[in-house]
Image (cartoon, rainbow, N blue to C red; front, side, top):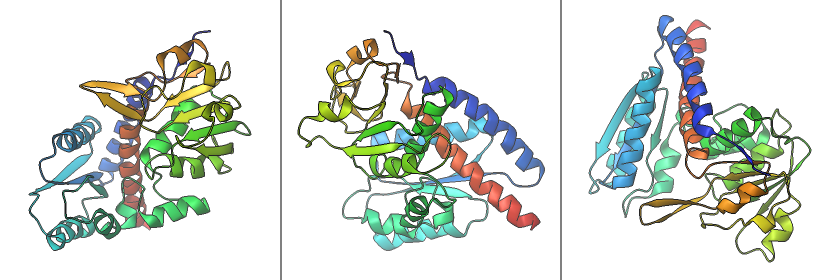
Length: 289
């Protein structure tokens, strides 16, 4: 067996084309979607990631706004920068790039973001909305994974889904999302982690495996039920080489598999744009109400 490739790059390209059309329609109504970023300090990976977000914005017609602040700023100065985006009507959604340099308090910063402008969907208010199944911005990587599985026709409803990892950005919100009774979800979800005894015993029963632990090669071929769908959402680095949580040999057992590069990452970025456009859509609706 050779697994069907869950090509996130190709799907993200399609989503961005659809967003380009929607952004144009909104702009004709006088609403240009705006995405903001706040970058503190000179962390090179963070700066590159923020730059990619602005490149994505330009590719679909979203206006982008950016505040770059020195690592020496105070918590008060960071709060002031967040408040400027909170009250700026041209900024529909924004993010504070993490990690923040010490001694800045990340929790305080993230809580300061206006929930309806939280493009990452990780504000406690929005996570609460997710728990309730209420409308609101969904965390980008979980939303991207669900959309990727759905696009390739991977059966999820009523199936056994095992998520490895319980982090705030992927594992916990993804478990909530996939358990909800909504299209592409409604699964029987089990959340495990690297400290679980006999991890393979859990995985071999899974119809869908999502690995988000950040441990290279954690999921081995003998842990995967033949034909299962496997998503490598966790990554680590070996020098400059990006490594997946999923061993390459899994491709000979799985029915569906994300590639090492071009799987979940492009979908996360596409969902960020989608959340920003959704926020602009709400603004357009409010303006005509």
